[in-house]
Amino acid sequence: QVQLVESGGGSVQAGGSLRLSCAGSGYAYSTYVMAWFRQTPGKEREGVAAIHSAGITSYADSVQGRFTISKDYAKNTLYLQMNSLKPEDTATYYCAIGGGWIRPLREAEYSYWGQGTQVTVSS
View: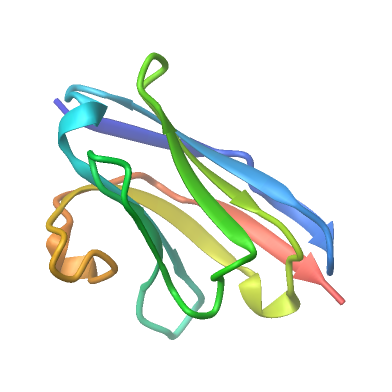
């Protein structure tokens, strides 16, 4: 059974940094596309960053240059390093697995999801 557990969320002031982690089990990290999404109340889930099993990455324009997605195969863990955070980055962040690479930031591409971790950025 696939399980994904996010951690690392919290509250930070604008300009600060956070690193999110997603620990997984029940599959091989090395063979799937994985991604981070975020959602705020009343809005659709938004793709933030994705990473292909070959290490290729894709980012939303809104986070390009500020966020970095990475994987540690040995630990079966996905990361999202978030720098220069802005109040508009405030959201619940989810990791997901199983997407295709044609549209890697599209929610429908992913089969399994974590429960989410809250990130709050104050101005």
